[in-house]
Image (cartoon, rainbow, N blue to C red):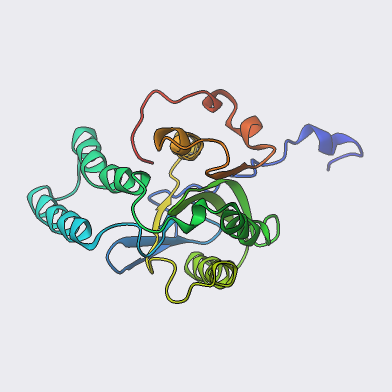
Length: 237
């Protein structure tokens, strides 16, 4: 039996800790890319404006990726994985950072409207570790709560922010690309690498203060501990 005062000896579980493992009960869905749905899962997600990448670049990317995957069936060793990350996720991210499209999120009011949508249910339906609103895309690192599901949450974030931004700018039509890129966080190292990717993205894109909007949880660095420093391996999370 726990006596009065002894509860302080039991540390609280880490706030961000539900990592995906081989034994985790996940649901996998697919459109252009696979999506892993884990109850209470911890995710790194990227979504972008509909005009953020020229269609010719996208067609080139998907065709080259299709051919590469046919030639390199899984499972992959670490070297093959690093090549894939560099040639496909990282190359697409480099295109996003180049600033194609209307870049309406460069407008501070539009960026703030996205931030408000993300923060609205923070600590209630999910916990946000970190996010950055770039001129034409958004990265977010967060953990779901209870019955909250990833796909409906992303749809709500994108739908609400699209209405707000269209109202602010007087624009009409589709704002966001329909599909997002989500990655289930595997372990603390992966979590730290995702955090550093978000933190460093504005610098890599050559943005100055006021040209992006960054947020991280007040207790995030305490949980990362020794992982809070710059990670040695710089690949896309």
